[in-house]
Each structure stands twice: as structure tokens, then as C-alpha cells.
Image (cartoon, rainbow, N blue to C red; front, top):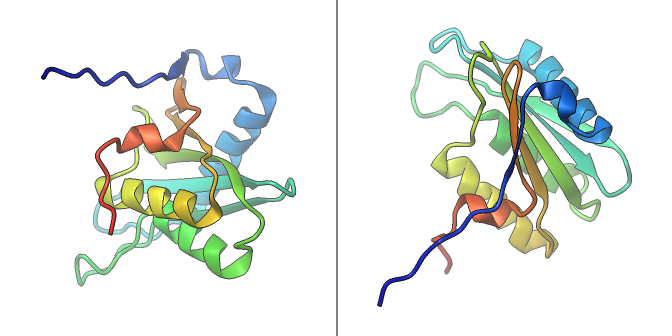
Amino acid sequence: MDNRLVIPYRTYAPLTELPPEDMQLVLRAREACETSFAPYSEYRVGAAALLRSGRIISASNQESPVFPAGLCAERALLFAHMNDAPHDFIVAMAIASSPGDRECYPCGLCRQTILDTIERQGATFRIIMSGDDSATVVDDAVSLLPFSFKL
């Protein structure tokens, strides 16, 4: 049997076409890039999440010379969120990078952690993957990893 997978998403180019609340998240993710520790890759990544309460939290990637001991911005943000405010659900997350010449997409480990967060909170959220002048948005983060690991 042949099956087909369709992933709905929207693109925004230029970036200024993003809705204002999404643009605010992208700007916070860009600010988070400034706290990145990336002396090895020189690829700074920031993530920002809008919580149900309206609060915005952010985090950045942290590298280590003892690879793979570092942590991506998305996982740093999601783990901190689960420790700090697990009942204040994430409703949207933005990811940005420096350099930002291309859109920043989550790695496989981050995609699985996003799904773990969705399962814990019982609700999906929107993901905004941005570059310097464009963004791709998925309304259901589950679509980033359609064949996910489950126990």
C-alpha cells in the first residue's frame, strides 16, 4: 500500500510579513543568540517560547569540548521550561541563528524533545523557524517528526 505524507506549513518572505506576535518571538530568539556559547561551531542558536500565560522564555545553544555534552537552544529551553513552569503550556516557539543566512530548523534530538514536551503538556504548539529575511511556520509541531519514537 502506498501512502502519502503531507506537511502543511506557511512561508514568510520577507520576514516582516510574519504576524506581530510571531515576529516578537523571532526577535526574542535572535536576542537569545547573544547568550550562546559556540566557540567550536561559531553557529549561535536562540529559541524563544510563548507560554499560555503570555510570558516569553528563551535559551541558547551551549557547546562543550566534550562532544556531545553540549545542548541545542531548543532543548535548553524545553528542559528549563519543564523545570520552571510545566503547567504554563508552550503555545509557540521561535528558533533563530547567527549567522542567519538560512532558516534554522531543529535537529532530530530537538524534534523528539519537542514531541516529548507536547506529550507532557497534552497540547501541540506552533514552531517558527526563522532566517534573516524569511521564516517557515508549522502550526502543529508534531508534523516535524511524523514517525516518532514512543515507548
